Length: 185
Image (tube, rainbow, N blue to C red; front, top):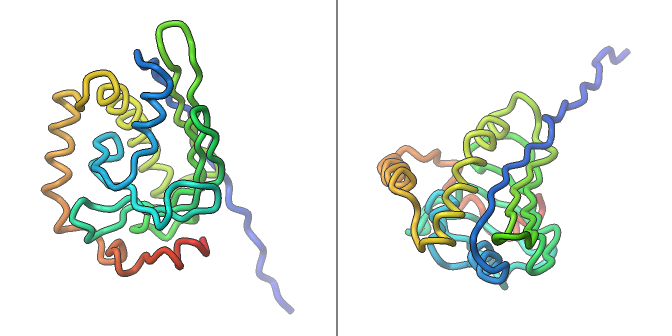
């Protein structure tokens, strides 16, 4: 007789990080969806794809030298210039993927930019990382779009993060996350 109980994973509440960006929506969108360039607002990672960002396409956020992929996922929605959604998995954690959605809405004074996280397993390292990273991402994104570079504090944080690359988990090495593996998440 099997006495094991099936446990359901409890999900954290949806988290929304918003900022008003003083720029045209086209500029905000084009900055958000850049590939093959260092993206300071994504912690200095480069968004790599096989054939560009499109629904169903796998992507990876990797170090500029290509040695590590910190985040992987698949594009779930791509509606320029208003909505982009993708699955999101930290390669250094055993947590299942969650969902990240970016929404852009033209308002007086610019663009309301929202970063929304859903399906994040409660109490996980992913939840902790998303909670810490959300505010940094929207604030740094705003600075990059409006001024062309991160704030002084953002630049300091990015510099410190670069110093810690040698301690990145081996599980995050790019060779462990080829696009065919990412496609199966």
